[in-house]
Length: 446
Image 1 (cartoon, rainbow, N blue to C red):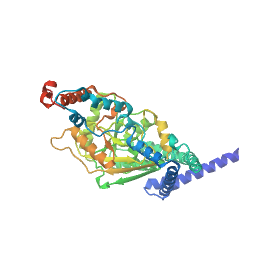
Image 2: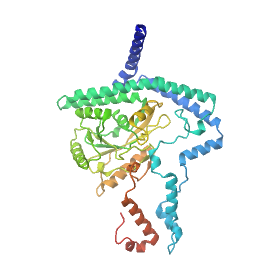
Image 3: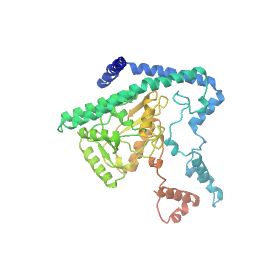
Image 4: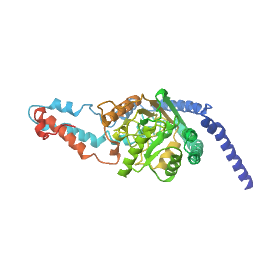
């Protein structure tokens, strides 16, 4: 027993020494030994080989059908607005066929609507050796199956323990470091140490995800006293951004381990945590955010205006509250590469533990981050218009689909006011512009 204990202690010591010397220390000082680059090179070559094997194993026609289904969805949509569609059908008198537009849209929504599909994982054209849920890849060849088995062993027996070790070190360092810094009096030294702790721990946590992040246009990085807004795919968006700079976070207060981290970090940095269910707290948050922005010496605020996670394919409606604060907006576009791992958090399907386990057992987290030129609210532009302009810029840069829908539809129904607005527009087009005023009882269109 003593021999086994000594061997286990020696193995643990060697393991921690390797983690400390090859990964932890380089991440702390912000350098790379080339290990992650070598890993990504081998991984890319392996996935390319697997793709070629899959293409050989299926017929060209089947592969073409698979690509079409992955890119176009279940149904083929006609990209025509309601106004144009009904205008092409409109005649002098109302006909029953005039309702066919809404009938077809209703059937499309039942089969596959463009909102709820944004809350499920992004479909891949080819298998990335992470799952066998796609029936087309149940069995292609013996070689491919052997490589998949080896991949499972590597991910669960090597990468998972390594990542859990790094994540544990990073989280504990964050809690202990920010708690100690929070005991210092306010001043430049405390601010400098707080930024150092946040940046260092974020780098460790990125290594825990085997993260490969490409930052573009760094000259547009958010500055102090500003507001950084970004599209939202995952809770790790925060780690992705703080790996390259420090921010004052704004978000919902949590319990458990997340709550411990929030309470520790707020002692060292003026983060803003709030309860979404309390309206009064929302007003307090708005007041505190305005005070924060007014101080040009404070870190830029990081806000995700969508308010929920979207599956890395789209950008949904930005809540206007973030754009009523004032100050300079620094847009940031984040786009993950789903080939190496699915970063999207489907909170209705996976709890936090299950989601983190999926991340820890993926190949890697690879993403691009674009810093866009700062934007300010123009004269005569309301908060909604400003939010839409920023959203369009982020969607264009990230290659994401821009949708007008509220991300809150993940858990709530469409508001009655929106239904009534669509009914008004429809009735006006059916009757015609000449009588639209009588039909809407003098109400002007929104």
